Length: 476
Image (cartoon, rainbow, N blue to C red):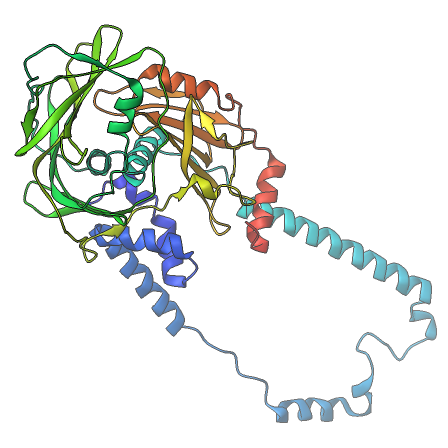
């Protein structure tokens, strides 16, 4: 069953579905939600039944019979063609031309006032307060997880994060860091490390199962198995299953292309001469250091340069995210389109040159916190405006969103829950900006500092009336 706060997002859309007034994109989202929510399906059936009863109860008033008109004219006799307000008395009772003009102007003025008052009343009645974003942190994390999957940085981790955000849970477990091969680490140039770790992940075909551990409160983890099917040059099918083996989430991720490697001050890489074995494959270990601390490790397939295992650590050296193949097979494979549902579509940054591609923000920067823009998505004209931006160098990723509306409490929100992307969200005029990353808090702070600052949302009585008139006229 879907969580109540998710159902509230679709309450108004159920009537729109019955009346066939939803946009194609919104219609697809509502139908996807209905497939997994029995309560909303019952509400939809009740709305349809009510509309059918109302339609059956309509009564059309019959036209007056012609015989009645003839009888009334016969009763009136020869005066049937005279205006009813005229009398047979003295001509002094007739209105002069100036009097008739005065009455006409008076009536016109009264009618104008009535129309204006009616329009003001309708504007107030139909006017809408700004939309309140119920869960800005959760939405930012969902967008981040979808983004890293869509740009093929780590489809399995992105899918597992999204499944957790949508309510999937497993029994808490513990996990230890993977053993490191014996020997002394050797320096590896940043250029070679980035080329090894951020190359084209869709250049070879393979399929397998990744196990993903996501840190929770304390030292426990949620664990999910994610099926991966990669077809060279096309993309990947990603499927998350629950403890009973049932499909909880399924995506098709097209080969979008990512990313241009970017240097990071203070980051150093090391490798080991000796190889180790992951999922039956020979693998080479690469470490990333900041200062004297190891912040991440990758075990890379020695033959195909595909990352077989990945671990990211907190300041104590404890794993925060662990993801690795428990089985993998290279060679011809296929994506099961009957299971795969389209990932919310992002467009490559190379197409960000058309008019209107950037909405809400004063401008959409091509670089943020030293990372290049690699993908974006923009609302269409049939829905409330929003903007999604994804910045990545293949190792560090930042997702940015602007959404029309207001924060629940109107104050800035910052969240650094363990095992979750860091998130900051703040009010910026008519909309809310949110930024998320699983890299360091310092990267998040830098990205936030390059975006518009906090600004209070001002919504006056005139704004409410204007929004009501736009709804009345079908504008926006």
